[in-house]
Amino acid sequence: MNGKFYYNMDLPLFKYENEFMLTLRTCGSLINGSVEYDVALREVIFAAENRVLKIEVDSKNLFLNGEEISFPVTPITHNGRFCIPLNLLAQAFNYNVAVDYESEIIYWGFLYGDANYDGVIDSSDYVLLKRHILELSNMSNKIICDLNYDGLINSTDLAILKRLILNIKTQ
Ligand SMILES: [Ca+2]
Ligand SMILES: [Ca+2]
Image 1 (tube, protein in one colour):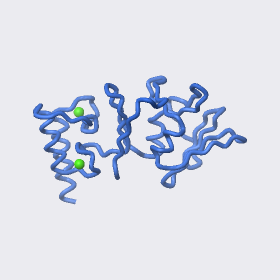
Image 2 (tube, protein in one colour; image 1 turned 30 degrees about the horizontal axis):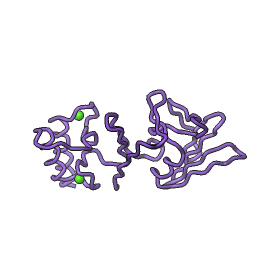
Image 3 (cartoon, protein in one colour; image 1 turned 90 degrees about the vertical axis):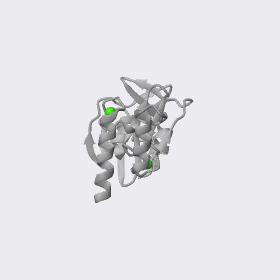
Image 4 (tube, protein in one colour; image 1 turned 120 degrees about the horizontal axis):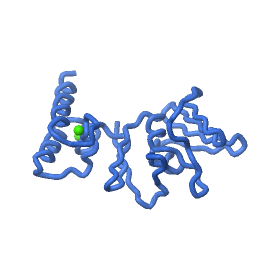
């Protein structure tokens, strides 16, 4: 899986009920697929990688490949644009996503532990993370090295990364 780094502060990207919301155009570029709005049926249809997410605009019912799904935050209309939660898109299309709130960077489609963001987890990631923890250098994309999802980057994450690398090598 190739990671994709996503960042654009000029976007109509905003927070609603603790969810980052995306415009439809942004959604299309993230999933690398198509977004269609069926005016007559009042439906938005996202399609990529054999997955189809359908949103009924008026009822906000959600369907993934024809099966109804639920998500805690419903899509909304904001400044005349239909917007959907970032995490709904990630969940529906099976991408890892993390948001660095301080720098307003969205990390999309990455591998957890891939510190140098090259799509592979190996010893160079370990070295980078270790140097970061020892405060010898500072990683810009440290959020993707939070391997136990506790909001901290420390030796626990380094230990998990080490196990990941060893497991990958013995496969
Ligand atoms: Ca890497
Ligand atoms: Ca952690």
